[in-house]
Image (cartoon, rainbow, N blue to C red; front, side, top):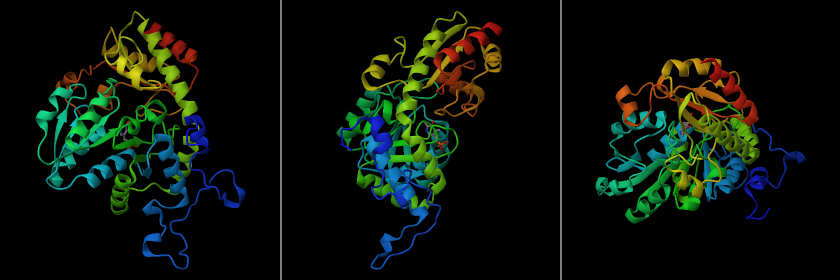
Length: 385
Ligand SMILES: *Cc1c(COP(=O)(O)O)cnc(C)c1O
């Protein structure tokens, strides 16, 4: 397969081993913790599942590196294992870093509860206010950490400014690209140093494992893998197998997520009961221009507010039939939540208000259903509230 193959082709063929195991078309589950040492092998050649170097891991690493346009990749036992291991690998006692102010809840918890205890300091930055960033630099600032889009308000970060800022000041730029997936955005091509995913979401796509991934240069991924070997957050072989299977349909699934996200957003905008819809694909979105320029599609997550407020939002969540009331995103099935009562419950109402997260905001993560059925379901539910 040529290096210029389209992402649909790469998802299926990239990284697949030439020496098919007994001719099997699919890489089997290598359900083995340890592997036979061969004559002449050194200590560093040991293959062991925690070291993420078994055939189950290697095929994933090669495929993910190809999909993201990176030199190397490593998978981890969850998205949070990928994030925490990356930060612990790239920062040491006395270091300082900058992180976006609106982060995934688990990442926010890691920063507020765990990072201070290891002697690493950070400041929060607004993802769309690059002029304010340099005032926060310190002599020991090493890294800048952002997310492609914020959850659940879908603000698109000024990614190009982050790359330029990191280059100017010699920082490692790290982006959590979970919400875009490499189908909609390849941050390494923009100049980011490290791309992280919760592979639990789009990469696996079937809501049946938790997994994480880190992609970047061989040097940085090598450092992160070394730390992962010590911390132990590796991905088990069976989850590797499922993630590998999921990845093959990533491009196909993203096409449907993108279409459903767009179609449901447009449908909701036209409903009198809906006060406001947030989706980067809408021309009314504050960073629509950036999204249109950088993204191949805007993904499957959107959020909206009903004119009638919180109780109406709860009634709507009860009244829809297809979406399941559950957190997470990126699976084949549509999910719905009210973030103030679920993912962002730990924040105070004041903190939520500060980032524009109202009590009645509803977040939808569309699956790969037909858009017409999703819209019809929301139509019947809106008629009931
Ligand atoms: C879910 C998620 C994570 C955490 O991933 P887990 O696989 O649940 O550990 C991190 N970042 C983003 C943007 C997420 O959506």
